[in-house]
Length: 354
Ligand SMILES: [Zn+2]
Ligand SMILES: [Zn+2]
Image (cartoon, rainbow, N blue to C red; front, side, top):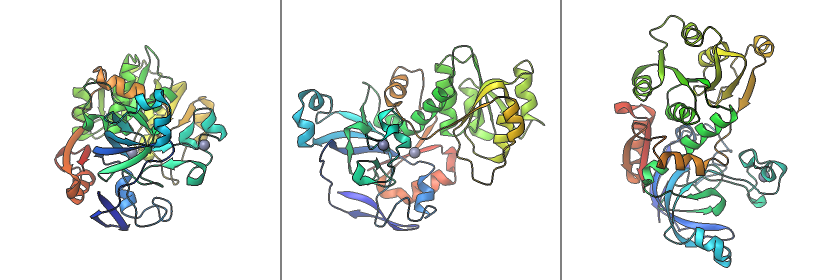
């Protein structure tokens, strides 16, 4: 098969490599669409030495959808399983597959598997510590593929990673009917966080951001607060919430400024979901946060959200339109990566078709 092979930092090419074979609980899938994740350019640039990938050569990419083309003997063994994951089934992939035996996996928290990175335990992190989807084919555990609802295109289903992370964050934040929500950072995860909050019954969703991405969120129905145009974005959020702040903030920027706004704009006793990945140098005002009794909720990836995330896309409650902006053949990975990183022509999510 053809695959994008990484040989070292910023050193990649399309090459012919052996097609993997499904064993155990795995199926072989023909990758039809794979989206570039915000983490991918950092992996390509070698920002996680020895971790992602653990060694070279490596095939990364984890936001994919495709079709099952072969199944292992184990998958065939159960008629029920074989029917659900039959050859020809259209599926979307998930990056994390837990070991299945640690406390966290046993209680459903497999994205924080205690055996992370230990492939011998059964753990997989496709596109990070195991072969990924920038290739014609990928083998995946059936635990990490979800059959697509009818009518959902592969390119839409490839948004599952961003969408599922957003939905997981909204669920972590216990967004309920009638809640007021603030989203900071109108990138793909921010846009989906707004849409899943609305689908969860939020009475209003305020988005802090700027430029065309904020304008897009406003067009979709969010209340935009442009931090380049207003003196104090927090004051504006307080104004919109009778001076008390929002019930839940979903922070999707990961910057010092956004985190400061997020803390100040959340009401006392509210929830603050950390969906942007802050760097270790960010300073947090622990005192005010403690006295406000904020619930701070970490988010890692998209556990147990694939089914509902895809269903809400399929029924129209959530749309990838305007979020998926560009499509390239896998052979033009370099061009696609530059388009994504430089946000050329308003690029938000860029999809490759192997
Ligand atoms: Zn991703
Ligand atoms: Zn585990």
